[in-house]
Amino acid sequence: MANIGRRNFVKRLWAALGIIAGAELLIAFSGFFSAKRKPLTSDSQKLVEAGKVSDFQMNSVFPFRSGKFFLVRLSDGGFMAVSLKCTHLGCSVIWNDEKKTFVCPCHASSFDQVGQVISPPAPRALDTYPVIIGEGKVMVDITKSVRRKQFESSQVTYA
Image 1 (cartoon, rainbow, N blue to C red):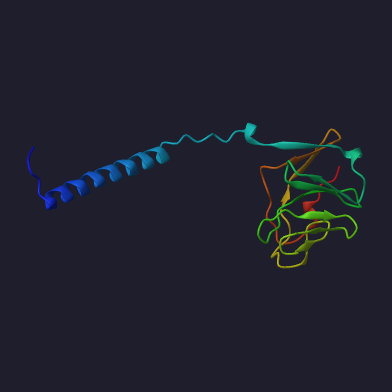
Image 2: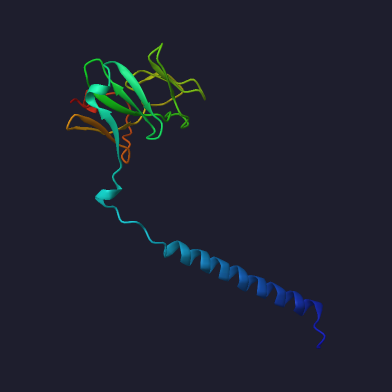
């Protein structure tokens, strides 16, 4: 066995480590760029069937935790699907039926029944989801959250 000097050994070791690191980077990048994406089709739309229009009393709020929203039935009969994520840091808000407000347990932001900010630090109103009413059923499209600054009457869906 040939006697390799210390300097040559260290050079060869660094070269081998460089080749290994380069190969790992090449594998990682090739995996990233060759990843297959799912095509966006009409099947990707996810509608949550909330129930019949007649199932929801006027001026009430119904939680749909699996859909990540609250379905609000306003006193005039309109429907809104309000996101349960606080616009401050994304904590889940809770409906307080006594005070008729959404409250964020993390930093005490509060929102009225339509998601409008009552007390900060939340910077804007709660997001909403499109509500679709057809054949007497209320459905919510949870694929399209709508970012908004404040409540507008056009955000309400009527049967």
